[in-house]
Amino acid sequence: LDWILNSLSSMQEPINVPGSGTGTGTLIFGDLVQIKKQLISVISLCKERGLVHSVKWASELAFSLDPLPKNELPPPTFFTEEDAQDLDALGLAKSYFDLKEYDRAAYFLRGCCSQKAYFLYMYSRYLSGEKKKDDETVDSLGPLEKGQVRNEALRELRVELSKKHSAGELDGFALYLYGVVLRKLDLLKEAVDVFVEATHALPLHWGAWLELCNLVTNIEMLKSLSLPDCWIRDFFVAHMYTELQMIKEALQKYQSLIEAGFSKSTYIMSQIAVAYHNIRDIDQALALFNELREQDPFRVENMDTFSNLLYVRSMKPELSYLAHNLVEIDKYRVETCCVIGNYYSLRSQHEKAALYFQRALKLNPRCLGAWTLMGHEYMEMKNTSAAIQAYRHAIEVNKRDYRAWYGLGQTYEILKMPFYCLYYYRKAHQLRPNDSRMLVALGESYEKLSQHVEAKKCYWRAYSVGDVERMALLKLAKLHEQLNESDDAAQCYIIYIQDIFSCGEQLEHAEVSTALRYLGQYYFKNKLYDEASLCAQRCCDYNDAREEGKALLRQISQVRDQTESSTTDLFGPLSSNNTPIRRVSPLDLSSFTP
Image 1 (cartoon, rainbow, N blue to C red):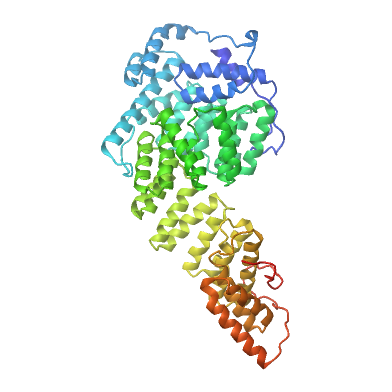
Image 2: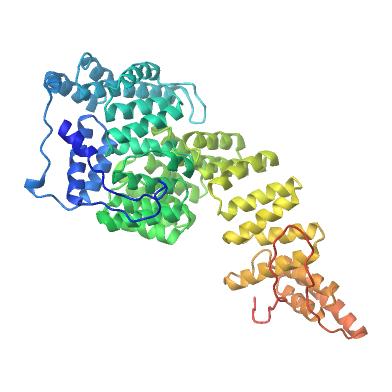
C-alpha cells in the first residue's frame, strides 16, 4: 500500500498551469506509461473503498490510453500487518457496503485498525446518514419545500475526524471524507483547506478535486490555492475554467490535454461539448454530443445538457428519440427525467415537464439543472412563488449558476419589483459579463428605476459585446427618444437598421418599421427631404407603418411644392451625454427591398 501511495504522490511532472500564477506555458506530461500505471493503481484503491465515481472517472481516462504490456502492469496491492488482521472483517463489511447496508457494514468494522477499514467505517456511517436523510425528505416533503432534514451523523463524524486530523492520522481518503463532512455542515473555509490537503496527500483521487471545484467561487480564489504539481491538476484547472465561464481558457486547456495524449478521452470530449454549450455555440456542441453518442451509445451522463441544445433548436424529433433511447437505457436516472421534462416543455406541456423535473429531484435533490429547469416551467405556468423557490434551491446547490440568478430577476420583473430585479441581474451579469441578455435586462431595470445614465451604458455595452437578440440598440434608441435626445436616437436607429439588413434577417422584424417611422420624422424635421422620403417609402412596406408613411410622403410633397430644399449633412455634433455613439453616414436603404 505504501508503494502505491508513494507512486501516486511521486508524479511531480513540471507543468505550467494558467491560473496558478506561472503563466500560460505548455503542458508537460512526461511518460504516459507512468500515468497509466498510476491510474490503474488508484482505480484499485478507490474500488476497495467504494468510491465508485472516482473509479469511473479514472477508468475512462485509463481506457483512453494505450494498454500496458504484462511486464509493465503495476504490482497488486500488498497488505500491512493491520490490513491482514482486518482482512476478514473488511471483506464482510465491503460486501454489505456494496449492497447499501451501511449500518451493517459499519457495525462489523468497529475496532478495526487499518486505514482502509477506518475509512470504510466512517464512510459507511456518513452514507447511512445521507440515505436516511434522503428517505425522510422524500417521504415527508414536496420537492419545493425547504426542509430542515439533516444528516444526523455529520456532527459526530466531524468530532471524530477532527481529533484524528489534529493528530495527523488521516490519509488522503479520510481527508477527503473529512472535507465532505465539513462542506455538508457549511464550514466552507475549513473544507477548502482540508480538500487542498487531501489533494496533496493523494493527488490522483479525482473526488477530492471535484469537491474542491464546487467550493471555488472565482479566479482569484483559484489562483490563491496551493495545489500539488501533479498532471491531474490540469484536468482540475480546465474544469474550473468551464465552471467559472472562462470558456476560451478552458478550451485551450482541453486542447493541450488532447495534444498531451488524451485524444481518445470521452470525458474531455464531453467537457468541450459542455463548454461550447455554455457559450451558446450550439452547432459545435451538437456535433460533439452526436460524436460522443456514437462512441458511447449507452452513455447517460451529460445527456440532459444535450437535450437543452435540442430544446433551444426546437429539434422535436431528435429530442423525442433521445428521450425514448434514455428510457430504454435507464428510466430512473436523473438525466433521463430531465430529458423527458425538456421534451414535454418543447411540446408546451408544462405541467408534465414540471412533474418529470420533480422526479429528477427526488432521485437527486442536488441536481442543479433540474431545479433551474423546474423554475422555468413554473414561470411558464405563471406560478411565480414556486419559480422563486426553485431558483433559490438552484443557487443553494451552485452559486455560480447564472441561469438561476437570471430566472430570479425575470420572476421579480413579473412581480414589478425592479430593485430586486437589479440585484439578481447584477449577480447574473457578474457570472456572465459578456452575455448581452444580462446587460439588456440590467438596462431595463435601471430604466425602470429612472437611472438613465446606467441604462444607456448597459444597452451600449450589450451591443458592443454582440447582441444575440438584437434588441439593445432598439432599447437605447427608444430611451434617447423618451429623453428628447433626437440626434442620438436617430444614430441608434440607423445602426440598428443597418445591422438588421447586414445580418440577412427578415425585414418583417417587429421593430424595423418603428425605426423607419422615427427616422422619417427626424429627417423631415431637419429638412432632409430626400432621406425622409426614402424612409417614408420604406414605411409603406410595413402594415403597421403604412398610413404614417403615406402621410409623411404627402407632407414632403407639400413642402417641396412650396420651396426647394437642398440636402445637407444629416448630423452635426452629437449632444454631450454619457452614451458612446459612433458616427455613421446617413441611412442608405436603396439597395434593400423588404
